[in-house]
Image (cartoon, rainbow, N blue to C red):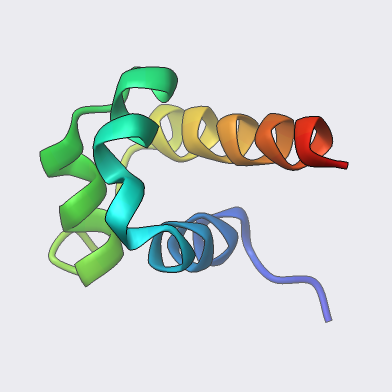
Amino acid sequence: MIDSIHVYVVEQLQACKGQWSQVADESGVPKRTLEKIASGETADPRVKTVELLASYFRSRRRRSN
């Protein structure tokens, strides 16, 4: 099953919860926005924001391999 890009981003945010300041700095997405997306407070975030975060997490995964 293929998850949505939004689900992927939420899972990645939850997996790196203690590193949100770094994610915010490196992705260009404000930390408060990360918190809102991860907690579900923002249930329908902007596509551009989700795409930025997905790109960030994908590039981070490529760097670690």
